[in-house]
Amino acid sequence: MENLIISGGLPLNGNVRISGAKNAGLPCLIASLLSSEPLRVSNIPHLQDVTTTLDLLGRLGATVELQENMTVVVDSRNVANFRANYEIVQTMRASILVLGPLLARFGHAEVYMPGGCAIGSRPINLHLEGLKAMGADIELEAGYIKATASKLHGAHIFMDISSVTGTENLMMAACLAKGTTVIDNAAMEPEVVDLADCLIGMGAKIEGAGSSRIKIEGSDSLQEHTHHLIADRIEAGTYLVAGAVTGGNVSVLDVQPENLLSVLDKLQDAGADIIVGQNDIQLSMNGKRPKAVNVRTVPYPGFPTDMQAQILMMNCIATGTGSITETIFENRFQHVQELIRMGSDISTSGSTVTVNGVPKLKGARVTATDLRASASLVLAGLAAESQTIIERIHHIDRGYHCIEEKLALLGAQIRRVHDNGTSREHLETDAEHVSGG
Image 1 (tube, rainbow, N blue to C red):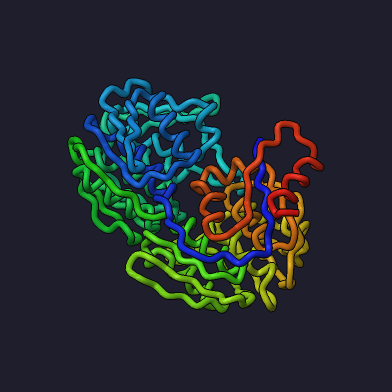
Image 2 (cartoon, rainbow, N blue to C red; image 1 turned 30 degrees about the vertical axis):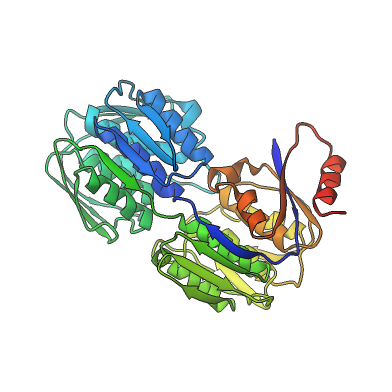
């Protein structure tokens, strides 16, 4: 086990380069299963979920090569195993994305029902119903989804809910299906567009990505390609909020600002001065305390659910009262009790949380419950007085590349420590050492 120790209360200042988007990188790597020729993906973030994805591809029979400059080459010509087993699928929900490519190219796939963060029910019926419409036979047996198809065919698919992974799975499957597939109420997230750009580079015929209707004309095969991932908009948003909650001045570099408009709008409402460049965003608080904002999470281009926990934490130390309504997942307020432990004034009613801002939070020993909850606790530790110890930080390693190193470059006092049975008193002594106490 590892923990993060943070000595808070310091304004963050400086520039931070944003890594490639995890939620674009995972499906792009998995898209390699559609081709017998190599796929190179650059700007890959060094994250646990990426490692898990490469492990999964290797178990299926793909050859994986790690090159310099964060580039990964995947060669799937010798894939001969079509079963994604329990022990790997349960650790990462994105594993479900191998279902469509394996079925489209090989006619057979077995994938264990996926796991991942415990943030609520995320049913995969949209994936399965779409594949059935394309001609797949699907059975559920002993926890596995078993899908077969002699040849997928085009179909007109209407998704009851705009699902990112559902859209991605069906879009990939349709690339090798016979005929034309239309996906209505498709997810419009930038990560879906990036996957479509990757597939188009591989020779796929896709129109409409980024809109609610995507049209795919099936191809016989896909070709070799090199794809550069977009920046991680959630990582960028998290560092901007870090600047806001510490009263600092932070710039995020190598980003696509157009993908962050809903987040930037809320930060401006909170009193931040925002300057948007071609590939960078500057946030300045100049020592000011943020103002509370109201947020309702909705699919893109609305406010992202993956930024909800971070903005909720900002409201904890803001002036005034703000409300957060979560409409995407029903169990995504697990960080609330940990923030209350640090002195936040929060009340919950159904899917809405009301936060009365307080001048300061107090450092405490807290536990991360999922990826974005982890981020909110790091932000709380940065803004709090005295030391904060965050346990179970393996969650944050799933989505943030070298978070303690990047924050340290901005002036944070933050340290990762091992807790192999170490006593609480020992950790708190380490925390005092970090702060110079």
